Length: 265
Image (cartoon, rainbow, N blue to C red; front, side, top):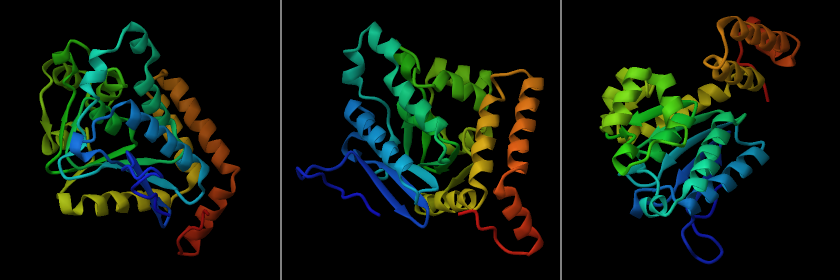
């Protein structure tokens, strides 16, 4: 299924959603503004996530940006300049990215260009990040007299360590794709021409595995930094106990012994 590129009023849709063979692709479609994440785009992303959660034909979601310049080049600076303290406390973009991060549907960010500010945080909220060799990452908010507030201070530190995260946030420097790979910010770097194929290949690999196993693995991994080790190990045991009683385990082990691909869906 392909979402039309224009709405009923003939305007370009800010977010496109397509699906094929179990893989959904969510595209931020504002290339003239380098896919900047204003309030209208955020609302469109929420609607797209609503649709993903309703549908049964999307098993993994790839997130990317339209055009060849930017993944998402940040938030809308005009909107930031007009915000007050209550807007900061509301944390609307933070809530949106938290929802993306917590989705049962696994997510893969295909970072095709600039991922600055809210764009970097969008990539951080995805489960896996694959970058074009033209991609750059940055959290430049301190240069505007604010700080990353859509999860960037927390997710970046967990991925690349407090030292690297502190340096990126305090200096706002742009991190090229290869440096991002060395830091652990992304898991792979490829050419722009091969980026979507690589992202979809990764998505297909994820989709081929047990849906509940993936969901519980995400949950336990997410809690790894929120609990002490013994509690984390307890969560691990509880999760695998659930899976031992589930038909996914039966299908997975049967497929192994019968030397065939498992059929989880």
